[in-house]
Image: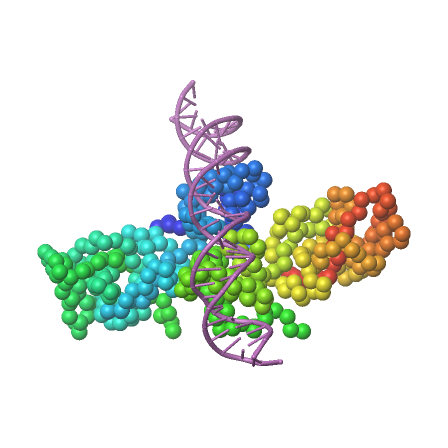
Length: 205
Length: 205
DNA sequence: CCTTTGGCTGTTGTTATATACAGTACACTA
DNA sequence: TAGTGTACTGTATATAACAACAGCCAAAGG
């Protein structure tokens, strides 16, 4: 299996990483380039920048472009839980991130971009129960048989995907639900992503 | 007694505080003014600024002036453990902060500014044991009888302070140690601070 | 030998962020 | 009824911070 942290770090890079950890622990903020430089006695903040790039390249951190103190430790990175989707409920925007779950995005293949909690029983025969969290890979491409996150106008739903010509069939995995038929010629249908995994928590409750 | 968190927060202020907590939990970074504003739908980042000031005034957070994302939750604020001082060991600079201990700075009076771990037995008769952590109030003023952090040239030591004219006596609280006599006329002596408290951890080990 | 990589210095442009100031509206209270 | 605090809008500005570019030096490796 072997996922998680790549550790081809040079000694110096490990020191930088440790400093970032320390900064988070002690100040609860990641450091700036200048702070790193001054802590290590660099005359130029760019030395810190280089180290950060190396750490990002090696997968130890991620850098939030343009954001002040935008250093994130991959080891405490998770996937954003974007919202809850039922049959017909509006999806929340990425900005309305509800929570983060500490899950390795690379656990799923293709990699998961965000999580979505499913409400309702419409996918129960696919083993997707009420309250389950779906790992979603963002894409507008779907192939027949995949479970997709689809947006029809303002409404978002999770269904199994089946295309026949210009007709798309969104099939609930529950015999009590009828398939949704969409003619892509005159109705707007957007594929938001495909389900690449599932997480079920709170099983003991 | 009554210290710690003042909770005269308005509902709105509590929401802001909760958002900051959430931001720290989810992104492991405090939010910017703009992020707060956009999360709450404020048209102006200044609304966030005002809330932050109110929260800072009420003691829920502290604001690091001029620093990007310089919001700190008081509830997870602590005192910096600056270094270790023995009789004659060099003190570490504030930048060489070793750790943070979650202790209310206002627990001590006057308030503690940093912590110092003491090595050695030179103050054992004052109840300061090897490994104890002293809470230090930064000041260059000391009165007779106080336990001070004194710097003589490059060396830092913790002793009881006694001034007689231009002579300063730094007295160890251990009969095996002789007092240090400093003539402030020709020797450099700096009072770094006075001990205002003591913390002993690891008593069960 | 040349090339690459790590680890730096030094400089500069852009933008993200903090923060001050002026003003509005509303609720509370002395 | 004037005064105060909360909760904002809107504008403006200084600077903190990111990030790109150009180099230098030493060690490693093919």
